[in-house]
Length: 133
Image (tube, rainbow, N blue to C red):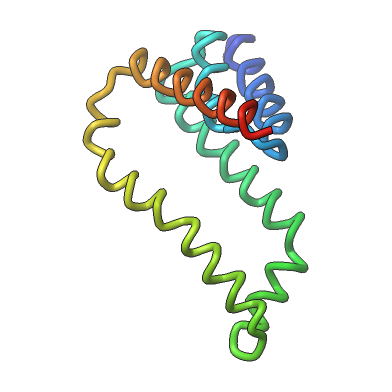
């Protein structure tokens, strides 16, 4: 039998993801910190994270399905579609580079230190958003 906290935690995490996905904050960062606050960690928490993130990605794809289809179908003939695709790629590449370079460092962090890093980076982002208005 599954205990009540194991059933409630994914619901809470889903709500946090839903509230933070469409605003300019890190939904993943908030998910990590919420897990820490409610004490939901371990293998099951990791699986729930993946399911919630896949759900969020699918929701974004569904929301922008017309735009995505327009871009995909227009790559061979539409300059705007090619420009949009190029801009997405350019915006994505720094994340790939930083992720590849920092992968080992992040893997070596303990869960607690990783959560502190997430909290610190969320704070830096908040300050940046306040300063730049």
